[in-house]
Amino acid sequence: MSTPMIHADGVHKFFGDLHVLRGVDLVVERGEVCVLLGPSGSGKSTLLRCINELEQISAGRMTVDDELMGMREVVKGGEPRLYRRSDKDISRQRSKIGMVFQRFNLFPHMTALGNVMEAPIQVLGQSKAEARENALRHLDRVGLSDRLDHYPGQLSGGQQQRVAIARALAMDPQLMLFDEPTSALDPELVGEVLGVMKQLASSGMTMIVVTHEVGFAREVADQVVFMDEGEIVERGVPAQVIDDPQQQRTRDFFAKVL
Image (cartoon, rainbow, N blue to C red; front, top):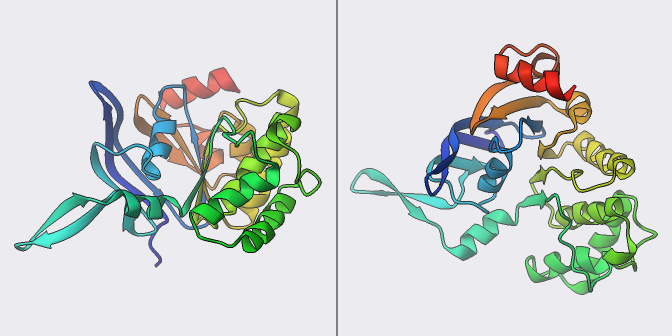
C-alpha cells in the first residue's frame, strides 16, 4: 500500500483568538480529486494554505508525499521532537505543490510565455531554452498556444487563469491546489477553466479543489468533503455527500445552493 499524497492529522489553525481549523483529519490518495465544499468562512481556503505552508498550522501534523510539512522530526534522548524547517527547505517542499488562486497573480509586464517560464528558471534552475520548451508544452495543454506573446492585460479572465494553471504545471508538481479558481470569472468564462481542470484530473494529477461549482464536484471528484465552522462535517463520494447527505448541516447547505 502506497502512502497517501496528503495526510492531515488533527490540524488546528488559530489567527489570534479566532479558531479557524478545529482538528481537521483528511486523507487524499495519490491520483485522487478531492473537492472541498461548504459556506464561506468554513476554513476551506485556510486548509489549502496550510497544506503548502502558506500558513503554519497551530497544532497537529500535515504530511505531503510522506514528508512532514514545515517541521522535521528529530529523535533526541529517545524522544521525538519537532523543529521548524529552514526557509530554504520549506521553499523546496512548496515547489512540489502547484497552487492556483482566485486572482491570477500574473506579472503584468511579462507575456503569457514569460509568466510560465519565470519560476522554472528562478526556482528550478532551468535554462531559458529548457524553460521555454516546457512553457510551450503547458500553454498548449491549456489551449493557449496562440496567445504566447500576449500580456495579461490583453487576455480575458479565463485565459489569464489558464496561464496561471500552466505556470503551476510548469513546476512539475506532485499535487495541485485550486482555491476557488473560477470565482473571479464572468459566468461565460467559467467553463473554459473547468474544462482544463477536468483534463488535468483525467491525467491522474492529485488535486484538491475549493469551489462552489457543485456540478464540477459531482462530475469529477473522487471524494467530496463538506466543511463548516472549521470542521469536516461529512465526506464521501459525490453521490453520497451531494445527493444523499446524512448530516443536517450538509442538507441545509445543499438545499440553498442546488
